[in-house]
Image (cartoon, rainbow, N blue to C red; front, side):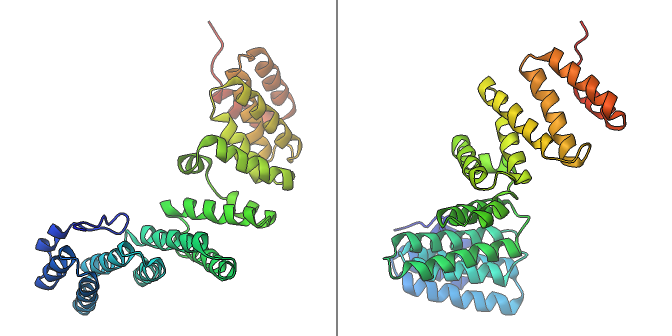
Length: 285
């Protein structure tokens, strides 16, 4: 074992040349397969950098130590090391990513556990996900944490909790994490249990609307029509649904229906109709 990839907890031993003498020694120990000794040296380096106020090198040393522990297969110890590092330096640019590594390792522990140990480990996994969202709710990694937490609640058939979490995920972020069909399946399952939830309906409608297939667009049109019926006329959600319907009719080649709906909207809601008209493509030759 001569390398350890830091994105997964790895570092190339040649990077030690850029560090202090103690870190070069740790890198050499790592290259020689003396992993426990290397971790001990990195831990001492963390203390040294902390005393010097060198936050970046301190973070790098602690991350590398955690990476080596992970590489040796001790997922529990590695998870706790990554977690402590992230919580110790919550504002560091890599803190959220490192904490998500800790969460992923906790998930592995749940997966590999026997029936007796699984409940406590599952609870720990949930706590870490909630901790992640508490500290880094706006990070890129937060959407992944929300998806994992939502999936967990779905697996436990705790639908209200699943809806609460998954409704906060941006649809584009969800499709970047999940395959599109699986994302659609998640929303369909949630709507079976919470058909009245407007946020889930909107997310489902948005995801369908991103398709180029007419069958999906037609279904999206139905979803947005239902959202409109369940919303306060001329309210924010109603306006989004009406706009989506107009655009989908145009995309489906139903320009005459779109025009009729637009004219009806202008008649009944003149105060908002202009904004719709400005967003629709011109049908003039």
